[in-house]
Image 1 (cartoon, rainbow, N blue to C red):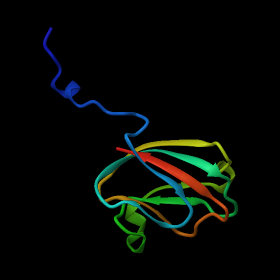
Image 2: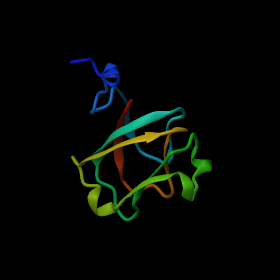
Image 3: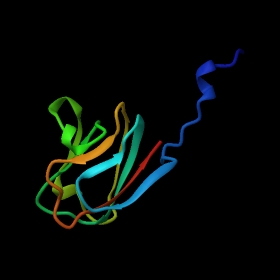
Image 4: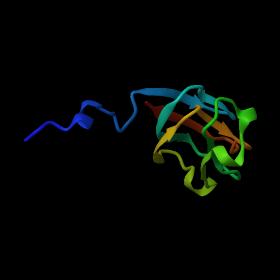
Length: 107
């Protein structure tokens, strides 16, 4: 049986890099990356958490919207698995959910 050439890439499903305790709209990483997980450290209220495939919040546009996580799902301890490839970067945009603190893992 031959070796599959696509098995040479080893990926970490939990993410090998992170940005901790994000408290405002902004850029998480400004390069190609795979968004793995968002962990809610402190609950947010009212607004959804909007995630974009851009290098900066000013570039938020409908064509770059990756996810909109409803405020009801932003409870302390929640782990949101996205496993999504972002071509330009990972950015939180829109209006930040009041009180939300989130940590992000990516590759």
